[in-house]
Length: 77
Image (tube, helix red, strand yellow):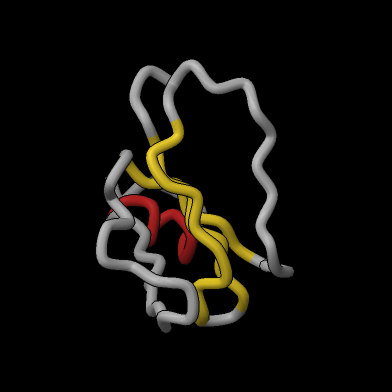
C-alpha cells in the first residue's frame, strides 16, 4: 500500500469501529473494539463524517459481462 487508509469495521448494518488515516508505512495489526462481520478499507480520510453506530447500506453489482457469465457460464459473444 502506498497511501494512507481508513479501516471501517461493520457488524450487520452498523459501524462498530473506525481506524483513521493509517500511514502506508504502518506495520501494526489493527483489530476492532467490537465484534464485526465485515471490514471496509477506504482511502485515508475517506471515513470522514462516519461515526461508530452509523448505519450503512451497500450493494454488490457485477459488471455486465460478469453478470452474463454468472448466468450463462460464458462470455456474451
